[in-house]
Image 1: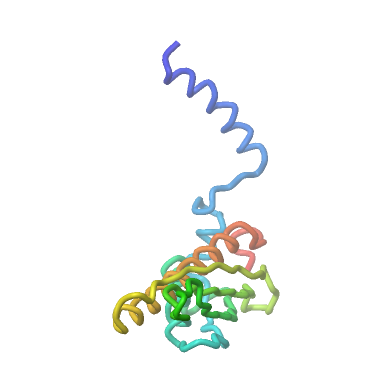
Image 2 (image 1 turned 120 degrees about the vertical axis):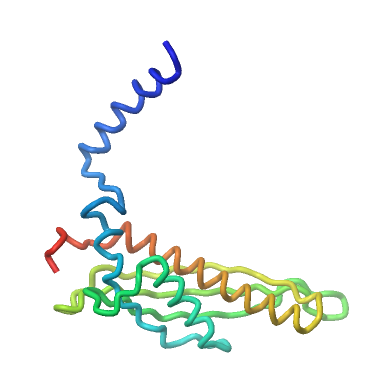
Length: 173
């Protein structure tokens, strides 16, 4: 028996089981990806106690890349973000050579027509940057770390929206 036939023999029952359990691919017709794409108005986060409207911009931009720009929108995604920076590597001279940027994003997806909360939750993660170069290098590293963190948080939020949002049948908005 060839490898192709063995794979087919194994894949066929798996496909039948996945279809029988109600599995729907996220981006398939009727899946959460199709329902949400272009239909979510992302609200800029209210609180980021660091330097930054920049972090808010990065987060909203990353979410709009993944979910489309839902200006008319059926849903609203409300966000609140907290970000902190801590020194991680300290030399004997008390110089900090590495920083860690931690972020937590709380999100709530609401249906605009009736205000019903479809899903909500929180995600958190961290990233870091080095402070061993020039001042310009350190500032660029800080900005890059902040952008990476917001991209990571956006990816986590989108994954949660796709997997936990109870959107009901398409067209039930």
